[in-house]
Length: 331
Image 1 (spheres, rainbow, N blue to C red):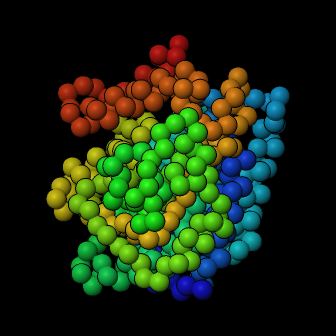
Image 2 (image 1 turned 90 degrees about the horizontal axis):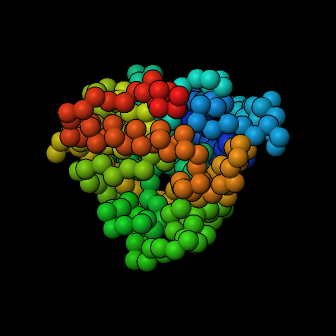
């Protein structure tokens, strides 16, 4: 058991179509949280999104009430471990999504905890996550380093720019670029069980921390020091999607060469971007692995607007798109 000296929040935004995958996510949280001795040092914050602005629920396949019940069952599992779980449910007609949630999570908790941890429904934190963070925090406190982010290592990614974040066991493997890449367990987008992740991480004797002076983040299992958020780094209000990219842009703008990202190179996380249960119960859609080209046109338009906002954030000049602009396009 690990006794924590620091305080943490794990915050996760869960969409209704992720509800079957959500069970795996809860199992992953249990795998992590059962290692903690002083549970009062960890907040759990879950936002369940039932909004049908972008995707409609196929009520011929599942009742809305059954979806909510599945969410509540997961919450109860965490509460039964002895943790307090803060929850919020987004209703059918609300415009509130991933970027909104993470922005609010950062802002609302940075004065309550030392670290904000971004959970993601298709991801597992390493079982040793808290142990590694306590080790890193001891070093950063001694070195007077307080504004930084930290990530765990992933499996083989799709281009070499991600190599600094790839786990040491996967660095020299080839990325498989075919239609079945998400089925190969050496590849970052594929599913990997908690037991398999634990077995890989059980070999760790000493944590191998590396650092880079530019942000390279994918959003899953990201750890942010509260001092970085207090300094003004957050997801900008102009972002309606692309939360991780927006956070990275602002970190680079505000911190410049003083930016620090630590990577625990020998501690594996799982980010199953093509989980076989990632998108279920969406009306008129058969896309369980969440391929972009199979998503509804409403989502594609929404994402395009956010990507234009990212470009404008970097280059400047044009007015940012807002939710109301999306509504006008849809009409």
